[in-house]
Length: 113
Ligand code: AMP
Ligand code: ZN
Image 1: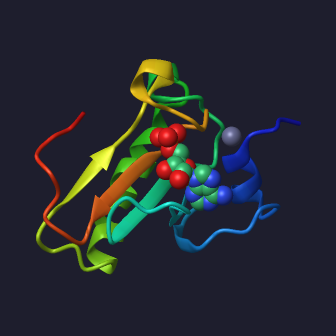
Image 2: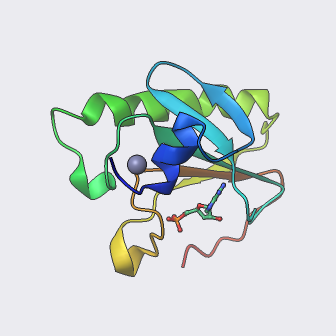
Image 3: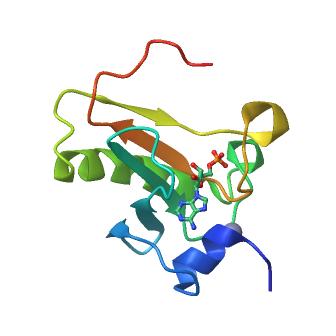
């Protein structure tokens, strides 16, 4: 048992707007979008963040990365997009389950902080 929000979403205990799933990956729309398209790509495996990646769990992260171009194509993000993963307190991470934000659908700001 854990009290992780994204584990609950993956399990279907909390509703989400799913856009993609496979054996290792679940992706859904961010509830508070920061761009016209804002999708969260998360591994089904609970991993705290990029900082917790290692040789044992790395396949889950790779599966997330491989899903990103498929999702971007399905969303019509032909002009480009941004992928962000926040890590820890200083990185602004609020949900402690590894996730990659896909932001797109407009020309994004060049600022990254
Ligand atoms: P981060 O700040 O990088 O940890 O990102 C967490 C993201 O999860 C934020 O962009 C939130 O808007 C998003 N979020 C929080 N709760 C939900 C939810 N129930 N469904 C979808 N997205 C959520
Ligand atoms: Zn989790």
